[in-house]
Amino acid sequence: MTKKMSFKSISVGILAFLGLSFFLYLWWAPESSEPQRFVAFSVEPNESFRSVTQRLFRERLIESESFFYYLARLTGKSGDLKAGEYDLNNQMSAWEVLRVITGSEVRLYRVTIREGSNMFQIARQLQRLGLVDEIQFLEAAWDPDFVAELNIPSYTVEGYLFPETYFIPRGTSARRIIRMLVEMFWDKLPDELFRQALEGPLSLHEVVSMASMIEKETGFSGEMPRISSVFYNRIARGMRLQSDPTAVYDLLPYGGRVTREHLFRNTPFNTYRIPRLPLTPVANPGLLAIRASLFPETTDYLFFVSRRDGTHHFSKTYEEHRKAIDIFLRGRRQ
Image (cartoon, rainbow, N blue to C red):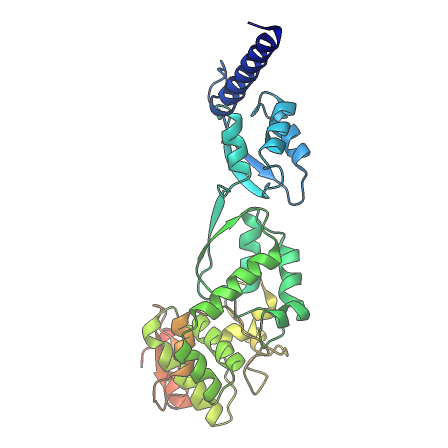
């Protein structure tokens, strides 16, 4: 055997040893006397890979800071880092950790937006989950350029944040979340409803505004078209719509009883004071409320009052309405 062949054999052996070591480091987590420990590890937006590597080492999720860093560089994954929150544990191999923080295994938070929620409540809900800053969300919701970019014919995004269950990773910006909810609105709005909104007596914005009132007035879907008929009948007669939820919309968060003092407040939303629909929707309606605002029942009703059981009593005249108020709200039997 020549010296040249001997040197070559030694080189191959060293490379094979290094390769095996590298393979073992990638795929087997090191033995540890520490019990398994789970960590919700967050990668911040625009954070450098070196910073993430340093924090992984401090959290004792990797054994070698420098090896992990160069592993990512050699495999081309250092540029694939994704902001978000990840479920890691101290018994994962280096390769498993790297695959998770550069892949699609970001932790998702389940967020259910309920019909009738308004943008103030949604902002607070998202903040409680640690997903966004409430003020930043509302600033984006009122940004006229952003609202126009989303094709919303209004001053805010109110009414167009579609009620649905979403799965949102931590680190998603307020604007991205708003865009997600608004895109769902446009996706879910059936073509027939969109065409009807364009061809009907109300504009799309007015349809959504009325639907928001209907949604807030009743939780019983079966009577939504009837409540819609009351609003249409009042519009036809030049009457104010007098919807209680519009009187307190700008007082949010507000969850108490609507009082007589509220009804006299002079705001662009209060339909006890303005002879039209509110300036913007007062909540985010679901499809049933939108459909009811487009297809009301044919009735002669002009008034309704709560029965205190989730449904309403409807009346054609003010005298009938006053009697219903005495019965259902004041407990006076005729």
